[in-house]
Each structure stands twice: as structure tokens, then as C-alpha cells.
Image (cartoon, rainbow, N blue to C red; front, side, top):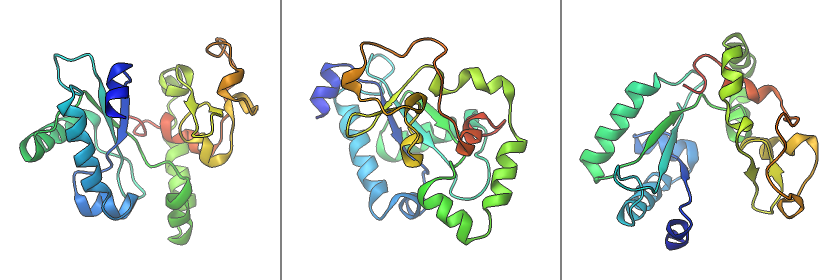
Length: 197
């Protein structure tokens, strides 16, 4: 698979929630941290993430609690240093997200009584200037079964691209400019002042 990714120059965006193994495993499952380290090393070995290479790998980080992430510039600097010093791993960019209130995380917010407070925090941080920069304006997400979504989070909500169930095989090309984008309350995560920083 790695050779196929390299052959087509696929840009990789990989979830790497935390530099702390215990935090990552508690958020994503036992053993996930070491699996991610192993995968990043393999990708580096075939050229991904190196400054002189056109093969790009970007990491996505997010906090483990009901709060916003640290500033992206400082977080990226720390990730670069720790991953390089401990594992000789390099990458192109780090993107910091607030946690999207979906799936296990939403269930935890409900169970811990934090959902309403967290949603208020996200909505009160809404930044109208962030709207044009969110990924749903320039990318689509293709699920494992070939159906299209406006972003990677919408499959968890069952929100198909533009509100219509469309298979990738039915698309003659990219969506038309200014196409309708399916939205819901988790969208505040990407448009909060400190959501996607």
C-alpha cells in the first residue's frame, strides 16, 4: 500500500492526537500510538515528510478534553522536536483541531455533563472569517464504500455531500463552485476562533 501511495503522490493527512502515548491510546484505542509511530517511520523511509520531497504527510492533533487546542505554531514546533528527537520522524505540517462532538467523544461529553457547555464554547467562538478557509470548500471526503461527504466528520452524522447520497462513480468531476454544503452543529468546531488553528 505504501508504494501505491508513493506512486500516485497521495497527500496523507494522519491523525496523531497527542505526543503522549497514554493520552493517544485512551482517545483512539490501545496500541494506536505505537501503530502510528511505526506507520510514520515507514512513510518517512519511502520519502514522505522530507523537505526535499514532493511526498507530503500532514498530522492532525487535538486535545483529549472539553477545551480548545494550544496555538498551532507552538504545537507544531513541539511535535517536530519530539518526533525528530525520539523517533527520527519528520512531517510537513501539523493541523490543530478542537475535538468534534461526535462518536465516542460526544458520548463522553453527554456522560460527563459537558456537552451543552462545550457546544456553547464552540458556538461562542464562531469566527465568520474562518468560513472561507474550512476544508469543505476545497475537498470532498470519500467513505470506504465510495459515497461522498463534504468533510471527514459528516459520515459520522450521516450527512452526505450537499445533502444527497452520491457515489463517487456518479461524479463526472469535482463538485460545482458554490455547491450546497451539508452542515450541522459539529461544524462549529472548524469555525471557532481556536477550533482549527
